[in-house]
Image (cartoon, rainbow, N blue to C red; front, side):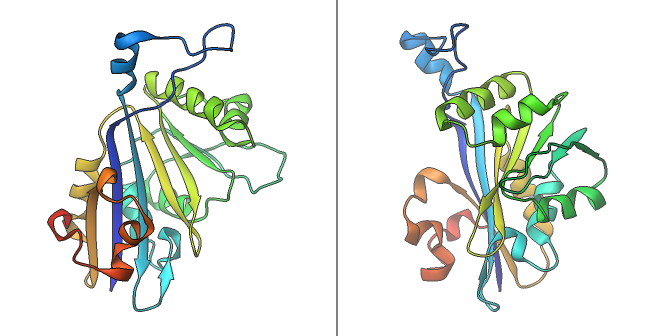
Length: 215
């Protein structure tokens, strides 16, 4: 049996973009605090219990990548870099037949960007070994401009995916999981309920833990 699971924070709290001086966040006070919760974040993962594999990209038929690809809208710009690779190249992806293998093949410093005109500087700001707070501010800026971002996340085998969006995604993921192949179960779970290893990897310990969130 295969498990595909999407954990989501909708809306979520991200750091504000830096002010013009680059030293402090640009908003303060109650108004700023409330406005922070305007972004949407998710994590798509998968495992194959029969094959004892854990990782979204490790599913041989790319079922998890296909679920994610089906909710992405173009144009999709793709930078596929391995750790330590210095050159930045950008490819324009169209059609699910191109998006799915790209998602499955993402290297450690890769990124997919939608609804944005990307630059090399932008890619480096998002994927180089930068301060995490700086990266989150850059992500927040791009989300505020309407951009959606997908990053690979290292898994036990292959990788999973982090998704940052300016709009809710969980309902579309749930819909995309409506026609999963046989012997594949899908779950869409609020992240606040899944903190801790035993809950995040619930299928390894108690597959019925999130039965109420099964698609």
